[in-house]
Image (cartoon, rainbow, N blue to C red; front, top):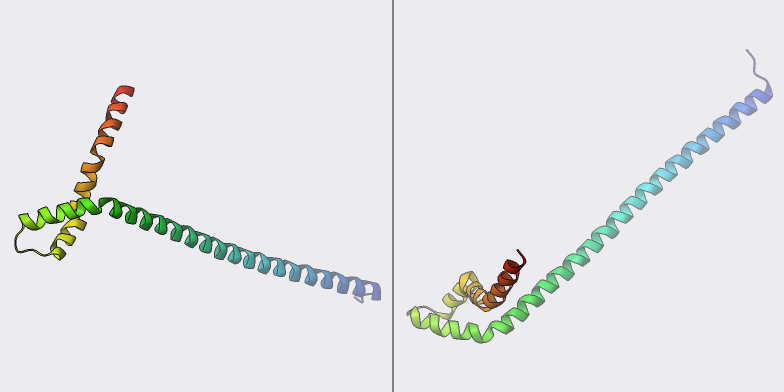
Length: 124
């Protein structure tokens, strides 16, 4: 069968429209993918910033705690070195980090914990 000029023009026009639509869809899909990657990168950067802030707060808290414990640490060091002849300050530092520091903090916080337990006991 022979096609008329109008039919061929119409088919060409429809093919061009289909090709343009498909190209537009590919462009939109690529743009969406690029936007997703951009959003993911922004999210990673934001989370990294949050993690840095969290680490800074932890370090600041540790620093503050160490300053507050300085006098107790010196007292514990003298006591520990006297109780453990033949040991060094380095030995004390290791022991301080492993357990003594936690014990000092626990003793220091014991009154506040006891008050909280008493309040809690009164509630129930």
